[in-house]
Image (cartoon, rainbow, N blue to C red; front, side):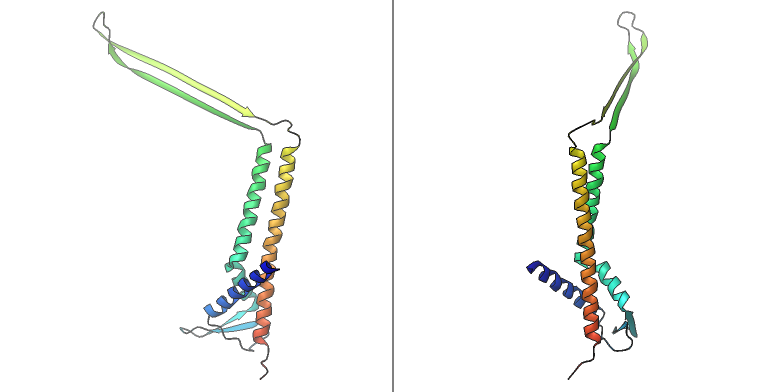
Length: 174
């Protein structure tokens, strides 16, 4: 429960920062717009969708959840890669040559020495007790959970902005 309250406070702080950043003053111009007066120019009207899109693209919690989901996707792909066979190879060719002196006849001779190496190796797991399949399933479920966490963060910020927007455009009772 405490973590949810912390997330709510962070979300409200992010929305508050967004509204302060644009020096926004909410007015009842329309049912779905927010008026912002920037000191260097004329008033700018923001729709509720623009406010939500801006918050979703700039909120740290949403960005963190998106990053975690992408990491989980890469982990799933890595586990799928362990099930695939692979082949690796290495080759090297050396050529040493030049002129030297024959010690018997004291004449120049041209010598050439060629040498080559090569290796080829591979790995193919035929059966390992379904451990690879279980790891793929485990990482896939973790990825699905992280995607849902990301969607939760997006929904949370969206609802918070809508709630703050409706509260700021409600008529004030004195």
